[in-house]
Image 1 (cartoon, one colour):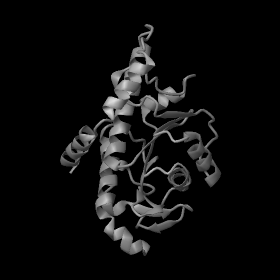
Image 2 (cartoon, helix red, strand yellow; image 1 turned 30 degrees about the vertical axis):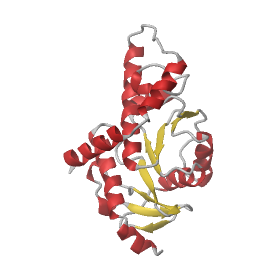
Image 3 (cartoon, one colour; image 1 turned 180 degrees about the vertical axis):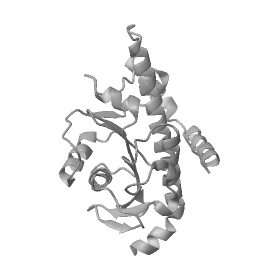
Image 4 (cartoon, one colour; image 1 turned 90 degrees about the vertical axis):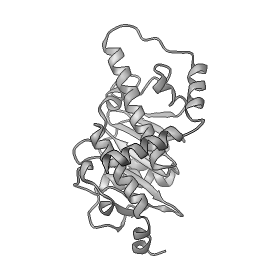
Length: 239
């Protein structure tokens, strides 16, 4: 399969990735022109689609999406790619075997990476419980990801989790589909926001029993229609 012919055939998937980026910008999950969303090319686990360097997420459209390989080389696309994006995303796709990789510095989730716990407490709010048993923590901040070894270190720290809180840095949310992963990203930030707000009252927080949190997680993932409907609503709103 030639990269250019495959790239053209992937226009619907590129459109979904671009939509997720625009939605994230509209919902306060982006940071300037930094951070990246990527999705593995179906049938080619060593290729992935990625947003380009220098474009604000609010302006990204399907034709702007680029394609890279697991070695971090750009295969197709009219824009350049930021090196740190290739290093992190290539490693997570290759090592953690994740189809969709969303990396952000969204404020409330990132705020929790600065705390001693480093992450969301999945025994607190109902929204947080959907992530129970799905979160890993990489507490070892190691500077900017400027080579493949740092991306590999992050990918290995995930240990199969869907969500990893990167100490003093940000978060990565993964999934099998763009709509499912984006739904998780959005609600992760909402759960983190509620925890930060509750903690700011200075009143002791009251978690539920871990068994209850696990039950709610199973209920939340018993069906994903709500995730699909949410993404469809974003498609109508964002155009």
